[in-house]
Image (tube, rainbow, N blue to C red; front, side, top):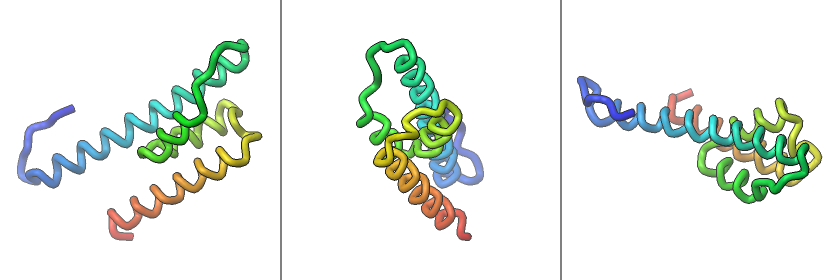
Amino acid sequence: MLRRVNRGGLTTLLKELAHDYFLLINIASFILMGVNKASAIRNESRIPEKWFFVLSMAGGPSGAFLGMVIFHHKTRKACFGFIAALALAIYFFILLSLIGL
């Protein structure tokens, strides 16, 4: 993950690290949503919902929201859907402001 600092210097390194972080946390959110759905189908112990909130607020709302849609998981929980959509919107607007649109 760590790359050599080149012409872009520290700014480029930080952008790359932020990219890697957001990519990994969204992948983790998505995978955990699938694991939790599989556990629900088998009536096994499940991941507490608070962890999905934490992952969404920590930068993984896209993965959580995509996991909800693809795995049809937690779609009946209006509160969870609202918070996941809100976190997704917040991160979308942050992204737009960072890239200058």
